[in-house]
Image (cartoon, rainbow, N blue to C red; front, side, top):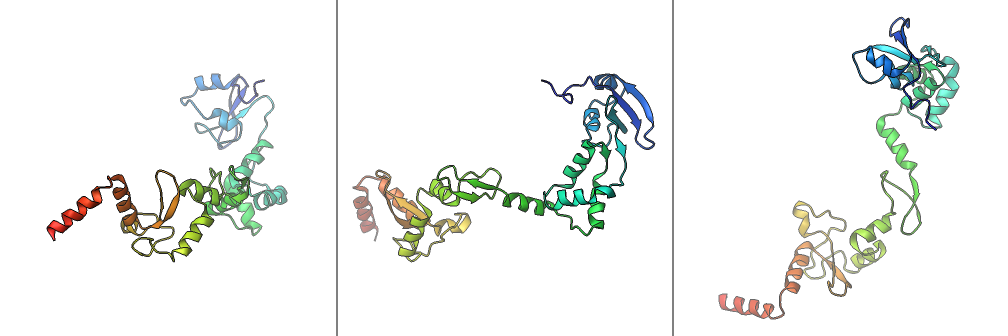
Amino acid sequence: MTSKYASNTRPVNQRDSNTRDLIASFTSINEAYQHVDFKSGIGLCCRGKIPTAGGFIWEYADDYVMIYTDDISDLTDDIVQMYIEERMSLNEIRQILCKTKRFVSRKAVQKLLIQNNVQIRTKNDDRRSFIRCLQRKCKTCDADFTAKTSNERYCEDCRFLKRRGISQAHFNSMYEHQNGKCALCSKVLEKYGNGCGQNKWTRCCIDHNHETGKIRGLLCGDCNITLGHIESKASSWLQVVADYLGRTL
């Protein structure tokens, strides 16, 4: 069944944005567009999403009688509850009031809250509150965790395992066993380095056997790259390197 808001066949009224006087009536939104010089916004204005469209106030003529006022003092308790307890934004509260046929501005809602000693949240506050509410179950291990972003689906341990091929507990154990140093050159390793700039040679690399997949130890970036080159060469290559160095010394 099609929603009554999905159709443009409902009659609409055009009113002056200052005096609220009726200017014209149309049998549908489509007909209204034929008499104005803009092509969008009337439906949004009729549903209370935006205050005006094309400089005019628009409303549904059949059963939509909007009360235009910024006096919402009788709804103080409800608005404070929606803002503090339900963590709604100012625009969300305004849209709810519009659905009850009371058109108010966002500034009017904010002014009412300030008069009642309610601290207005910033966008960052709303985002932190939104993130704290992201309690989810990990898709891999079904453990409960708090997501840091809206598209996060794995807990920290499973993300570490997917990214580095080893559990975080195993990684920490190896790091402590090697005293935070490279297994080959004993260079101090950055445990969670990002490998950018000069840190790429001291970042902690997990070395493994490329044939069996067995993890062998933790290396610095320099040793990890060098070992990879050595393994990719033939076994006789090391003897060739030794002979070359012997001739050049």
